[in-house]
Image 1 (cartoon, rainbow, N blue to C red):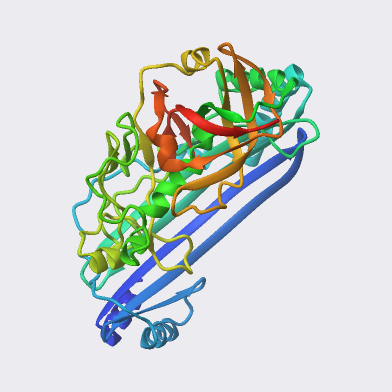
Image 2: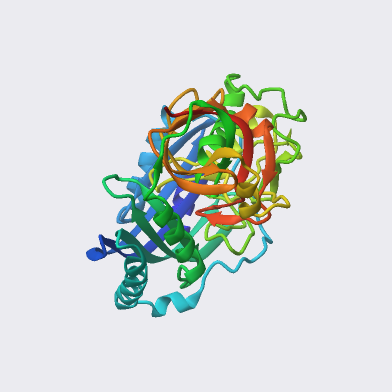
Length: 429
């Protein structure tokens, strides 16, 4: 890597080398039967150069010819985007505990045995179709640039999910867990899913009217994706965001607080630096309902006259970094989920939604099908909702938050409580 950076620095005004090495094992069960077991190993190197004010990118999966990779990056820069930023010098970052060496002792045999145990437990109590998946990976990556930055990190990642499929459908109930080391879905989590599955045998088509809706942590994407689309620095720069010039204004309920925490040890995506070598930081997006900040990478920070927030992330070795929020956390309230359910005369709780990627996302509009949800009547869950849609505007819905769960539930790279919103449009019979 040092030789590649030296060659690129000699030929360009600035240079940056990003590299990653990954290995993983995973397996999946369909209807309680082992369906697939895979092993993968991958590595890659991405070279970015800035020459005459323009940026170029080249990448390879096998560094056989350094000179050719540099030439490719320089050729890309000839017709590349004009940039006004410089690669940063980053040093003295905190060391995060992102690697658990115990993961090296895992094997596919361990995963198969754990899968059989979990699937047997669920199947005996429900008789339903159970799908599951397990996997673990080890990744090493780093970045160095002509400014003197030289950073690296080693990560471990273990994940497991279980799904109980509603009969005659492709939807169902999910439980997911991830950690930097081996971690099972515990009995309490499985029993919670089993209890809801047994209730799902009764189907209810709700009335078409406005009613209270509890958004479980797994359904927040339909609302939060609208906010993060509007908070995108690209949409700020192009002046198409409805949140433009609204930093410091209240945009949702004062009950809501939303931030990112790159240093939280419970997240497998925690990191002290982004894939451009900028330091990451805790960043408040919404504070008591007030819009506070947007995530930026080097490029958009420069274009908008802001400081980079360390959110320049790559989706693959072939892709350029782009500004993305991660490790999202939402503040908790003072009611348990059971208390929230008990407070509802007629309403629904949604766990997964269909069509959340469609509609006028930028302006906050949503109209989505309820893939997995339950009807609440007189404070009790009475059955699974069928043929149901919810719609509205994410900002209006989040302005009408009446209660927030008193604990967060980890879902992927987010920690979110369930939230109860009043006056959501529900379409049923």
